[in-house]
Image 1 (cartoon, rainbow, N blue to C red):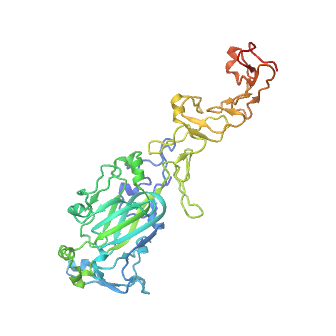
Image 2: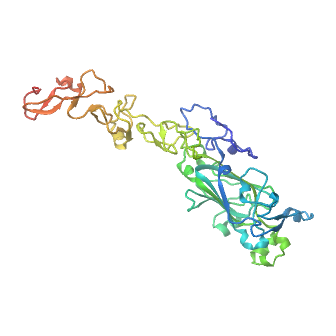
Image 3: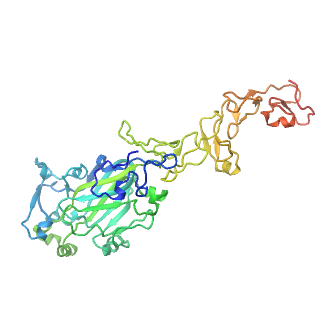
Length: 449
């Protein structure tokens, strides 16, 4: 199974180096696959995503912008022009540049166009549901966003937050009503949504990064956690940018509602820019597939193992329900077990009541599990298709897995019920397979045929 990520990453942390982010650092990917779960390689989901944004610089005509870094260090202004309709590529900054793997970047309108451009929303459609492990955001020629929300959705309609980001810890309370997590982000539960100011400092003034791990550091990262798996599932990823990082003096002007009175030489320094959005994730295969090849339509699908079936290997295959389906983990393959139907059924179901009663035979000859064979053929019946249906018998010496084990009873005449002894389990009583059964009250042990 491949270990490496398919995207170039600048930060070689343990999380980003794993092919499976739910495994502990240093875990051997080649460890016996019969005893552990299987997971596809992590790759950059953003590279194949659709991406949209509600505002881009230059859409309403050419506009001038200047880097904040020159103002800070009293250098000569280094300004540029953004024009979405320009024939010069270096003047266009569409949102597609944020995921194309180049050094080009997306850029929002500057605040000289109005304070409304503090609120910009970027949405990525991953085109199918994936298990997302982390998001890396890289800025271009501006500081990192100040206040913003990272969100997820399965259907593109209902979104839930993954994480809040704020300029200060106090802003976590004021803007989002959430207690801040001071310092480097840590997580108490598998689905905790925190607010952090760790990545919202003014510096660096350009080429800043925001690393968001959705898995690493959470309690369920190294073992099965249905809550964590649910928390990391998404098809849509949304970045709701809500405040541009500004100098304190300029921030006061914006806060008191005087943005329109601020000199445009100031407001043209404030905008968002994003050079790269990387989303590390993998197909949702429930711990039962290590490959996720594309279908002809381009959609990725799990190549299920461990006798599992379904788009996400989320159920046991029809003949493998002796035990209930479980998710595979790095320490447990949770392989689905075959039902014992002696070749007379093509499917079975798991029944917890049967499991409790200890009446289902497994393929090892043990009464363990709750598999119940469905639609027994060849005139067989029973939990395991282990007996002949009424009116049929299995001759002595014929095994249960014989392709045609049951013969029709041949019983008629006075006192005959039409049924006969079904197998050799009553020989100690003097009853042999095929012996006819009489009506109640008859004194004969066999009915004449």
